Amino acid sequence: MPLRDAERDLLEAGARDAAEAILRLAQRESARILSVDVEPLSALVARLAPRAVVVGFVVSGGVQGRFALVLTEPAARVIAQAMVGGRHTLVPSEKLGKRLTGALTELGNIAASAFMNGVAELVHQSCVPSVPAFGHGDAAEVLPAALGDALEVQVARLIIGEVEVELAFAR
Image 1 (cartoon, rainbow, N blue to C red):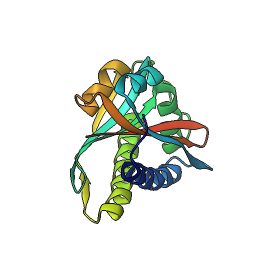
Image 2: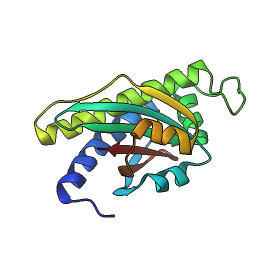
Image 3: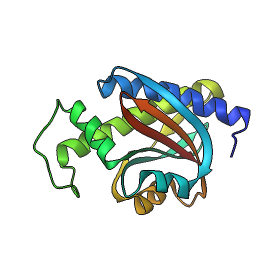
């Protein structure tokens, strides 16, 4: 489903700023925006299944809604391990461990702040993300928990290095 021009501008501005921040934090060489669009939440769930990592926020201020940084579990591991300095003791697939969870939560926090700063510049009002809520598990459970009861979400798909990262916003 296509975005209206104003929505696309907001999503692209936020995605650009977030991509730059994630690039630096994840110590990657390149970042690009693959797409920005509106899609059913069920499509996002299907793309990230079976297991996803989500760092979600409630956004207040000039633009209100819910924001989430979302990754497949393998993508989350790659980025988190790069952030903490390479490969560490592998943990069972159902657990990420405190160090990787902390790194991913910080990544979400930085991405949300950068995204909201990009949006705030366009709307000329502050946009403030809440304290992050970390979710890891079945994509069909963790995504709706982070994005609320939205049936459709605005999604920016990014490639950071070789890893796909998705930024989702629901009003």
